[in-house]
Image (tube, rainbow over all chains, first blue to last red; front, side):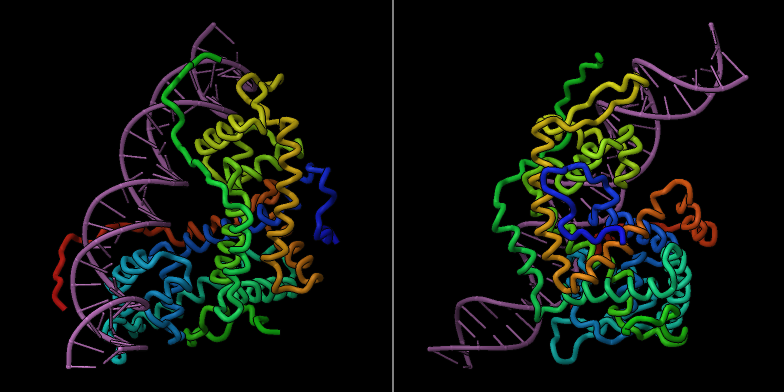
Amino acid sequence: MLFMNDARGHDDEPCRGLHNDLGWALGTVFRTYAKAVRMAFADLPGGPRGYQVLTAAGSGLAGTQLTLAAWLGVDRTVMTYLLDDLEKAGVIERQPDPADRRARRIVLTPSGRDLLGALNRRLDEVEERVLVALEPVERATFRDLTARLASHFAEPSTDACVEVAQAEAELPPERPRRRRRAPARPTSR
Amino acid sequence: MLFMNDARGHDDEPCRGLHNDLGWALGTVFRTYAKAVRMAFADLPGGPRGYQVLTAAGSGLAGTQLTLAAWLGVDRTVMTYLLDDLEKAGVIERQPDPADRRARRIVLTPSGRDLLGALNRRLDEVEERVLVALEPVERATFRDLTARLASHFAEPSTDACVEVAQAEAELPPERPRRRRRAPARPTSR
DNA sequence: CAATATGAGTGGTTAAACAGAACATCTGCA
DNA sequence: TGCAGATGTTCTGTTTAACCACTCATATTG
Protein backbone atom coordinates (compact mmCIF):
# COMPACT_ATOMS: atom_id res chain seq x y z
CA MET A 1 0.00 0.00 0.00
CA LEU A 2 1.45 3.26 -1.04
CA PHE A 3 -0.24 6.14 0.72
CA MET A 4 -1.63 4.70 3.88
CA ASN A 5 0.00 7.27 6.13
CA ASP A 6 -2.93 9.47 6.91
CA ALA A 7 -0.71 11.80 8.86
CA ARG A 8 1.77 11.69 5.99
CA GLY A 9 5.19 11.56 7.59
CA HIS A 10 6.54 13.79 10.29
CA ASP A 11 5.99 17.48 10.56
CA ASP A 12 9.67 18.28 10.41
CA GLU A 13 9.94 16.52 7.09
CA PRO A 14 8.59 18.94 4.50
CA CYS A 15 10.01 17.02 1.57
CA ARG A 16 7.29 14.68 0.43
CA GLY A 17 6.86 15.45 -3.22
CA LEU A 18 3.62 16.01 -5.00
CA HIS A 19 2.81 12.39 -5.56
CA ASN A 20 1.67 12.06 -1.97
CA ASP A 21 -0.43 15.20 -2.21
CA LEU A 22 -4.13 14.46 -2.35
CA GLY A 23 -4.76 17.98 -3.58
CA TRP A 24 -2.46 17.59 -6.53
CA ALA A 25 -3.90 14.18 -7.38
CA LEU A 26 -7.48 15.36 -7.10
CA GLY A 27 -6.75 18.43 -9.19
CA THR A 28 -4.98 16.43 -11.86
CA VAL A 29 -7.71 13.83 -12.11
CA PHE A 30 -10.42 16.44 -12.14
CA ARG A 31 -8.63 18.55 -14.75
CA THR A 32 -8.05 15.58 -17.01
CA TYR A 33 -11.61 14.37 -16.65
CA ALA A 34 -13.01 17.85 -17.20
CA LYS A 35 -10.90 18.36 -20.29
CA ALA A 36 -11.93 15.04 -21.79
CA VAL A 37 -15.61 15.67 -21.15
CA ARG A 38 -15.33 19.23 -22.40
CA MET A 39 -14.01 17.96 -25.70
CA ALA A 40 -16.61 15.21 -25.92
CA PHE A 41 -19.43 17.69 -25.26
CA ALA A 42 -18.01 20.50 -27.34
CA ASP A 43 -21.13 20.68 -29.49
CA LEU A 44 -23.46 20.95 -26.52
CA PRO A 45 -24.29 24.57 -25.62
CA GLY A 46 -23.25 24.47 -22.00
CA GLY A 47 -20.56 21.84 -22.33
CA PRO A 48 -20.31 19.49 -19.34
CA ARG A 49 -22.59 21.70 -17.30
CA GLY A 50 -25.18 21.60 -20.00
CA TYR A 51 -25.06 17.83 -19.74
CA GLN A 52 -25.53 17.97 -16.01
CA VAL A 53 -28.54 20.21 -16.44
CA LEU A 54 -29.98 17.76 -18.91
CA THR A 55 -29.36 14.91 -16.51
CA ALA A 56 -31.05 16.75 -13.68
CA ALA A 57 -33.96 17.68 -15.88
CA GLY A 58 -34.27 14.13 -17.17
CA SER A 59 -34.34 12.68 -13.68
CA GLY A 60 -37.19 15.01 -12.88
CA LEU A 61 -35.69 16.05 -9.59
CA ALA A 62 -34.55 19.41 -10.85
CA GLY A 63 -36.14 21.86 -8.47
CA THR A 64 -35.85 25.58 -8.95
CA GLN A 65 -33.05 27.10 -10.94
CA LEU A 66 -31.54 28.24 -7.69
CA THR A 67 -31.32 24.80 -6.16
CA LEU A 68 -30.09 23.44 -9.46
CA ALA A 69 -27.36 26.05 -9.57
CA ALA A 70 -26.31 25.27 -6.02
CA TRP A 71 -26.37 21.59 -6.84
CA LEU A 72 -24.06 22.13 -9.79
CA GLY A 73 -21.86 24.56 -7.92
CA VAL A 74 -22.38 27.52 -10.23
CA ASP A 75 -23.63 31.02 -9.64
CA ARG A 76 -27.35 31.59 -10.14
CA THR A 77 -26.68 34.28 -12.72
CA VAL A 78 -24.70 31.78 -14.76
CA MET A 79 -27.61 29.40 -14.72
CA THR A 80 -29.68 31.97 -16.59
CA TYR A 81 -27.36 32.03 -19.59
CA LEU A 82 -26.85 28.30 -19.44
CA LEU A 83 -30.59 27.64 -19.60
CA ASP A 84 -30.98 30.29 -22.27
CA ASP A 85 -28.55 28.45 -24.51
CA LEU A 86 -30.06 25.06 -23.81
CA GLU A 87 -33.57 26.36 -24.43
CA LYS A 88 -32.41 28.02 -27.63
CA ALA A 89 -30.98 24.68 -28.72
CA GLY A 90 -34.41 23.14 -28.13
CA VAL A 91 -33.38 20.49 -25.63
CA ILE A 92 -35.05 21.90 -22.53
CA GLU A 93 -37.98 24.11 -21.73
CA ARG A 94 -38.70 26.53 -18.95
CA GLN A 95 -42.22 25.75 -17.84
CA PRO A 96 -43.97 27.90 -15.27
CA ASP A 97 -44.31 26.14 -11.97
CA PRO A 98 -48.03 25.83 -11.23
CA ALA A 99 -47.40 26.02 -7.50
CA ASP A 100 -45.10 29.05 -7.54
CA ARG A 101 -45.40 31.54 -10.31
CA ARG A 102 -41.93 32.91 -9.61
CA ALA A 103 -40.19 29.63 -10.25
CA ARG A 104 -39.69 27.76 -13.49
CA ARG A 105 -39.56 24.02 -13.93
CA ILE A 106 -36.80 22.75 -16.20
CA VAL A 107 -38.07 19.89 -18.33
CA LEU A 108 -36.55 17.92 -21.17
CA THR A 109 -38.00 18.21 -24.64
CA PRO A 110 -38.33 15.00 -26.69
CA SER A 111 -35.28 15.93 -28.72
CA GLY A 112 -33.46 16.70 -25.49
CA ARG A 113 -34.30 13.24 -24.25
CA ASP A 114 -32.86 11.69 -27.38
CA LEU A 115 -29.77 13.85 -27.10
CA LEU A 116 -29.25 12.86 -23.50
CA GLY A 117 -29.19 9.22 -24.47
CA ALA A 118 -26.52 9.87 -27.06
CA LEU A 119 -24.52 11.96 -24.61
CA ASN A 120 -24.64 9.18 -22.04
CA ARG A 121 -23.18 6.81 -24.55
CA ARG A 122 -20.39 9.27 -25.35
CA LEU A 123 -19.71 9.82 -21.68
CA ASP A 124 -19.30 6.12 -21.06
CA GLU A 125 -16.51 5.96 -23.59
CA VAL A 126 -14.79 9.00 -22.16
CA GLU A 127 -14.93 7.74 -18.61
CA GLU A 128 -13.66 4.40 -19.76
CA ARG A 129 -10.63 6.19 -21.13
CA VAL A 130 -10.09 8.29 -18.03
CA LEU A 131 -10.27 5.35 -15.66
CA VAL A 132 -8.12 3.12 -17.82
CA ALA A 133 -5.37 3.06 -15.22
CA LEU A 134 -7.57 1.16 -12.76
CA GLU A 135 -8.83 -2.37 -12.75
CA PRO A 136 -12.58 -2.79 -13.28
CA VAL A 137 -13.16 -3.52 -9.61
CA GLU A 138 -11.13 -0.50 -8.63
CA ARG A 139 -13.11 1.69 -10.98
CA ALA A 140 -16.30 0.71 -9.23
CA THR A 141 -14.66 1.38 -5.89
CA PHE A 142 -13.47 4.77 -7.04
CA ARG A 143 -16.93 5.66 -8.27
CA ASP A 144 -18.45 4.49 -5.02
CA LEU A 145 -16.07 6.39 -2.76
CA THR A 146 -16.27 9.57 -4.80
CA ALA A 147 -20.05 9.42 -4.92
CA ARG A 148 -20.24 8.90 -1.18
CA LEU A 149 -17.97 11.85 -0.50
CA ALA A 150 -19.97 14.06 -2.83
CA SER A 151 -23.30 12.94 -1.43
CA HIS A 152 -22.11 13.72 2.05
CA PHE A 153 -21.29 17.28 1.03
CA ALA A 154 -24.40 17.77 -1.02
CA GLU A 155 -26.90 16.60 1.55
CA PRO A 156 -28.17 19.56 3.49
CA SER A 157 -28.96 17.34 6.45
CA THR A 158 -25.32 16.76 7.27
CA ASP A 159 -24.61 20.34 6.36
CA ALA A 160 -21.03 19.63 5.48
CA CYS A 161 -20.43 23.23 4.54
CA VAL A 162 -20.48 24.08 8.21
CA GLU A 163 -17.82 21.52 8.95
CA VAL A 164 -15.56 22.81 6.24
CA ALA A 165 -16.29 26.39 7.16
CA GLN A 166 -14.80 25.76 10.57
CA ALA A 167 -11.43 26.31 9.00
CA GLU A 168 -12.54 29.80 8.17
CA ALA A 169 -12.96 30.77 11.79
CA GLU A 170 -9.47 29.51 12.55
CA LEU A 171 -7.81 31.68 9.94
CA PRO A 172 -9.52 35.03 9.47
CA PRO A 173 -6.47 37.01 8.17
CA GLU A 174 -6.86 39.08 5.07
CA ARG A 175 -5.31 38.25 1.75
CA PRO A 176 -4.22 41.32 -0.23
CA ARG A 177 -4.62 39.60 -3.58
CA ARG A 178 -2.93 42.01 -5.86
CA ARG A 179 -2.19 41.20 -9.47
CA ARG A 180 -0.23 42.59 -12.33
CA ARG A 181 3.18 43.33 -10.95
CA ALA A 182 4.42 46.90 -10.91
CA PRO A 183 5.09 48.18 -14.41
CA ALA A 184 8.77 48.36 -13.58
CA ARG A 185 10.76 46.51 -16.17
CA PRO A 186 14.46 46.28 -15.37
CA THR A 187 15.26 44.05 -18.36
CA SER A 188 18.65 43.54 -16.78
CA ARG A 189 19.62 40.17 -15.50
CA MET B 1 -22.51 -1.98 -3.91
CA LEU B 2 -24.13 1.10 -5.28
CA PHE B 3 -22.54 2.16 -8.53
CA MET B 4 -21.04 -0.95 -10.00
CA ASN B 5 -22.80 -0.59 -13.32
CA ASP B 6 -19.94 0.61 -15.45
CA ALA B 7 -22.24 0.97 -18.42
CA ARG B 8 -24.76 2.72 -16.17
CA GLY B 9 -28.11 1.35 -17.20
CA HIS B 10 -29.48 1.17 -20.69
CA ASP B 11 -29.04 3.76 -23.35
CA ASP B 12 -32.74 4.36 -23.72
CA GLU B 13 -33.00 5.26 -20.07
CA PRO B 14 -31.78 8.83 -19.76
CA CYS B 15 -33.21 9.27 -16.25
CA ARG B 16 -30.42 8.42 -13.87
CA GLY B 17 -30.04 11.43 -11.66
CA LEU B 18 -26.86 13.13 -10.76
CA HIS B 19 -25.90 10.83 -7.95
CA ASN B 20 -24.72 8.25 -10.46
CA ASP B 21 -22.72 10.82 -12.37
CA LEU B 22 -19.01 10.52 -11.85
CA GLY B 23 -18.53 14.01 -13.25
CA TRP B 24 -20.87 15.55 -10.74
CA ALA B 25 -19.29 13.63 -7.87
CA LEU B 26 -15.76 14.48 -8.92
CA GLY B 27 -16.65 18.13 -9.36
CA THR B 28 -18.38 18.34 -6.02
CA VAL B 29 -15.54 16.66 -4.16
CA PHE B 30 -12.94 18.74 -5.92
CA ARG B 31 -14.85 21.97 -5.32
CA THR B 32 -15.35 21.23 -1.64
CA TYR B 33 -11.74 20.23 -1.18
CA ALA B 34 -10.49 23.26 -3.07
CA LYS B 35 -12.66 25.59 -1.05
CA ALA B 36 -11.51 24.14 2.25
CA VAL B 37 -7.85 24.32 1.29
CA ARG B 38 -8.29 27.81 -0.11
CA MET B 39 -9.58 29.00 3.22
CA ALA B 40 -6.89 27.18 5.15
CA PHE B 41 -4.16 28.70 2.98
CA ALA B 42 -5.72 32.14 2.70
CA ASP B 43 -2.65 33.82 4.14
CA LEU B 44 -0.27 32.14 1.70
CA PRO B 45 0.42 34.30 -1.36
CA GLY B 46 -0.57 31.79 -3.99
CA GLY B 47 -3.15 29.94 -1.95
CA PRO B 48 -3.29 26.20 -2.65
CA ARG B 49 -1.08 26.59 -5.69
CA GLY B 50 1.49 28.39 -3.63
CA TYR B 51 1.51 25.39 -1.34
CA GLN B 52 2.03 23.06 -4.24
CA VAL B 53 4.93 25.14 -5.46
CA LEU B 54 6.43 24.99 -2.00
CA THR B 55 5.95 21.24 -1.92
CA ALA B 56 7.60 20.83 -5.29
CA ALA B 57 10.45 23.09 -4.29
CA GLY B 58 10.87 21.28 -0.99
CA SER B 59 11.04 17.92 -2.66
CA GLY B 60 13.80 19.25 -4.84
CA LEU B 61 12.28 17.80 -7.97
CA ALA B 62 11.02 21.12 -9.25
CA GLY B 63 12.56 21.42 -12.67
CA THR B 64 12.12 24.50 -14.77
CA GLN B 65 9.25 26.87 -14.23
CA LEU B 66 7.73 25.53 -17.40
CA THR B 67 7.64 21.93 -16.27
CA LEU B 68 6.43 23.04 -12.88
CA ALA B 69 3.57 24.96 -14.48
CA ALA B 70 2.62 21.98 -16.60
CA TRP B 71 2.82 19.78 -13.54
CA LEU B 72 0.45 22.03 -11.65
CA GLY B 73 -1.82 22.50 -14.63
CA VAL B 74 -1.46 26.27 -14.87
CA ASP B 75 -0.31 28.54 -17.65
CA ARG B 76 3.37 29.43 -17.65
CA THR B 77 2.57 33.14 -17.52
CA VAL B 78 0.67 32.56 -14.31
CA MET B 79 3.69 30.87 -12.81
CA THR B 80 5.63 34.11 -13.12
CA TYR B 81 3.28 36.04 -10.88
CA LEU B 82 2.91 33.13 -8.52
CA LEU B 83 6.65 32.88 -8.02
CA ASP B 84 6.92 36.64 -7.76
CA ASP B 85 4.54 36.66 -4.83
CA LEU B 86 6.18 33.70 -3.13
CA GLU B 87 9.61 35.21 -3.59
CA LYS B 88 8.38 38.54 -2.25
CA ALA B 89 7.06 36.67 0.79
CA GLY B 90 10.53 35.27 1.30
CA VAL B 91 9.62 31.60 1.19
CA ILE B 92 11.28 30.65 -2.08
CA GLU B 93 14.14 31.89 -4.21
CA ARG B 94 14.79 31.89 -7.91
CA GLN B 95 18.35 30.68 -8.28
CA PRO B 96 20.03 30.67 -11.66
CA ASP B 97 20.47 27.19 -12.97
CA PRO B 98 24.22 26.59 -13.36
CA ALA B 99 23.62 24.25 -16.27
CA ASP B 100 21.23 26.48 -18.20
CA ARG B 101 21.40 30.22 -17.75
CA ARG B 102 17.91 30.66 -19.14
CA ALA B 103 16.28 28.50 -16.52
CA ARG B 104 15.79 29.22 -12.83
CA ARG B 105 15.79 26.72 -10.04
CA ILE B 106 13.07 27.19 -7.44
CA VAL B 107 14.42 26.49 -3.98
CA LEU B 108 12.96 26.84 -0.51
CA THR B 109 14.37 29.41 1.88
CA PRO B 110 14.80 28.36 5.52
CA SER B 111 11.70 30.28 6.49
CA GLY B 112 9.90 28.67 3.59
CA ARG B 113 10.87 25.27 4.92
CA ASP B 114 9.45 26.12 8.32
CA LEU B 115 6.30 27.45 6.75
CA LEU B 116 5.84 24.31 4.70
CA GLY B 117 5.92 22.21 7.84
CA ALA B 118 3.20 24.31 9.40
CA LEU B 119 1.15 24.19 6.22
CA ASN B 120 1.42 20.42 6.12
CA ARG B 121 0.01 20.25 9.60
CA ARG B 122 -2.87 22.50 8.61
CA LEU B 123 -3.53 20.45 5.52
CA ASP B 124 -3.77 17.27 7.50
CA GLU B 125 -6.61 18.71 9.56
CA VAL B 126 -8.42 19.99 6.49
CA GLU B 127 -8.18 16.69 4.65
CA GLU B 128 -9.33 14.90 7.74
CA ARG B 129 -12.44 17.02 7.64
CA VAL B 130 -13.03 16.54 3.95
CA LEU B 131 -12.68 12.77 4.09
CA VAL B 132 -14.78 12.42 7.22
CA ALA B 133 -17.49 10.55 5.34
CA LEU B 134 -15.17 7.61 4.72
CA GLU B 135 -13.77 5.01 7.04
CA PRO B 136 -10.00 5.21 7.66
CA VAL B 137 -9.35 2.24 5.39
CA GLU B 138 -11.50 3.77 2.67
CA ARG B 139 -9.63 7.05 2.96
CA ALA B 140 -6.39 5.28 2.26
CA THR B 141 -8.01 3.50 -0.67
CA PHE B 142 -9.36 6.74 -2.05
CA ARG B 143 -5.94 8.36 -1.76
CA ASP B 144 -4.33 5.43 -3.44
CA LEU B 145 -6.75 5.23 -6.35
CA THR B 146 -6.72 8.98 -6.94
CA ALA B 147 -2.95 9.11 -6.82
CA ARG B 148 -2.66 6.26 -9.27
CA LEU B 149 -5.04 7.91 -11.70
CA ALA B 150 -3.17 11.19 -11.45
CA SER B 151 0.22 9.57 -11.82
CA HIS B 152 -0.96 7.79 -14.91
CA PHE B 153 -1.91 11.10 -16.48
CA ALA B 154 1.15 12.97 -15.33
CA GLU B 155 3.74 10.47 -16.48
CA PRO B 156 4.97 11.48 -19.89
CA SER B 157 5.89 7.89 -20.64
CA THR B 158 2.29 6.76 -20.87
CA ASP B 159 1.48 10.05 -22.54
CA ALA B 160 -2.11 9.97 -21.36
CA CYS B 161 -2.82 13.24 -23.09
CA VAL B 162 -2.77 11.40 -26.37
CA GLU B 163 -5.33 8.90 -25.16
CA VAL B 164 -7.67 11.59 -23.95
CA ALA B 165 -7.07 13.68 -27.03
CA GLN B 166 -8.47 10.91 -29.16
CA ALA B 167 -11.88 12.23 -28.33
CA GLU B 168 -10.87 15.44 -29.99
CA ALA B 169 -10.44 13.80 -33.36
CA GLU B 170 -13.85 12.23 -33.05
CA LEU B 171 -15.61 15.52 -32.50
CA PRO B 172 -13.99 18.39 -34.37
CA PRO B 173 -17.08 20.65 -34.67
CA GLU B 174 -16.75 24.25 -33.69
CA ARG B 175 -18.37 25.75 -30.63
CA PRO B 176 -19.56 29.33 -31.19
CA ARG B 177 -19.31 30.25 -27.53
CA ARG B 178 -21.18 33.47 -27.44
CA ARG B 179 -21.99 35.26 -24.22
CA ARG B 180 -24.10 38.11 -23.01
CA ARG B 181 -27.50 37.55 -24.49
CA ALA B 182 -28.89 40.16 -26.86
CA PRO B 183 -29.67 43.41 -25.05
CA ALA B 184 -33.34 42.86 -25.79
CA ARG B 185 -35.35 43.28 -22.64
CA PRO B 186 -39.02 42.49 -23.02
CA THR B 187 -39.80 42.92 -19.30
CA SER B 188 -43.23 41.66 -20.17
CA ARG B 189 -44.39 38.50 -18.56
C1' DC C 1 28.34 30.64 -37.31
C1' DA C 2 23.75 30.74 -38.88
C1' DA C 3 19.14 28.82 -37.86
C1' DT C 4 16.03 27.15 -34.86
C1' DA C 5 14.23 25.84 -30.37
C1' DT C 6 13.46 26.73 -25.52
C1' DG C 7 12.88 29.17 -20.91
C1' DA C 8 11.29 33.27 -18.92
C1' DG C 9 8.88 37.62 -18.74
C1' DT C 10 5.53 41.42 -20.50
C1' DG C 11 1.25 43.52 -22.29
C1' DG C 12 -3.14 43.28 -24.00
C1' DT C 13 -7.44 40.86 -24.89
C1' DT C 14 -11.24 38.13 -23.45
C1' DA C 15 -14.17 35.15 -21.01
C1' DA C 16 -15.85 33.56 -16.83
C1' DA C 17 -17.03 34.52 -11.98
C1' DC C 18 -19.01 37.76 -8.76
C1' DA C 19 -21.70 41.22 -6.47
C1' DG C 20 -25.67 44.33 -6.58
C1' DA C 21 -30.08 45.99 -7.85
C1' DA C 22 -34.71 45.52 -10.03
C1' DC C 23 -38.84 43.07 -10.38
C1' DA C 24 -42.35 39.73 -9.42
C1' DT C 25 -44.15 36.67 -6.31
C1' DC C 26 -44.81 34.07 -2.06
C1' DT C 27 -45.14 33.66 3.04
C1' DG C 28 -45.99 34.91 7.72
C1' DC C 29 -48.06 37.79 10.92
C1' DA C 30 -50.78 41.44 13.07
C1' DT D 1 -56.86 42.37 4.77
C1' DG D 2 -52.62 44.51 4.45
C1' DC D 3 -47.89 44.95 5.36
C1' DA D 4 -43.01 43.40 5.97
C1' DG D 5 -39.74 40.36 4.73
C1' DA D 6 -38.08 36.38 2.07
C1' DT D 7 -37.41 34.02 -2.35
C1' DG D 8 -36.81 33.18 -7.56
C1' DT D 9 -35.29 35.12 -11.77
C1' DT D 10 -33.10 38.28 -14.64
C1' DC D 11 -30.17 42.17 -15.79
C1' DT D 12 -26.04 45.29 -15.28
C1' DG D 13 -21.62 46.46 -14.13
C1' DT D 14 -17.22 45.25 -12.03
C1' DT D 15 -13.46 42.36 -10.96
C1' DT D 16 -10.82 38.27 -11.42
C1' DA D 17 -8.14 35.06 -13.75
C1' DA D 18 -6.97 32.50 -18.01
C1' DC D 19 -5.20 32.96 -22.61
C1' DC D 20 -2.46 34.70 -26.73
C1' DA D 21 1.13 36.99 -29.11
C1' DC D 22 5.39 39.08 -28.71
C1' DT D 23 10.24 40.07 -26.91
C1' DC D 24 14.59 38.85 -24.89
C1' DA D 25 18.25 35.86 -23.60
C1' DT D 26 20.33 31.52 -24.04
C1' DA D 27 21.00 26.45 -25.94
C1' DT D 28 21.24 23.40 -29.44
C1' DT D 29 21.84 21.71 -33.91
C1' DG D 30 23.77 21.50 -38.42
